View 1 (spheres, rainbow, N blue to C red):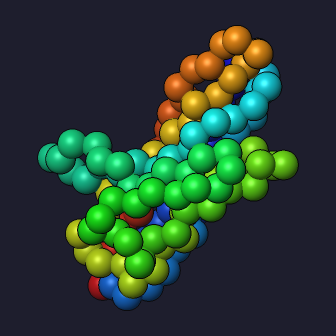
View 2: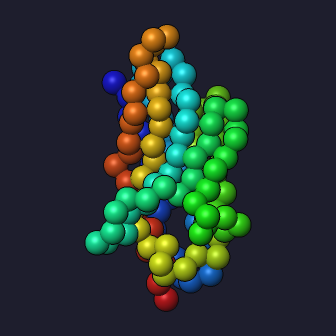
Length: 120
């Protein structure tokens, strides 16, 4: 059984910063791609950023320069540093990972989500 658990969400004022964390636990052979997605009320879930096991990153164009994804392979964790936050960044942020539970089996996993609210 594999779990992804996010933390670090909350209420922040416009222009502020937050750091989200996501910990993967359970029967893990290795973790390939990790990512953050977000879903605002009434909108579809959208990609925020991805990071490969080797540290290559990719960002949604609209978020480049404000958000930074990173990971700690030894701890099976992925992070999202968010700065210059705007009200339109308000959303539930989800952690995603493609995890190998054995040499031959890889599965996609989602966290339960963490709420980020940007408001004065």
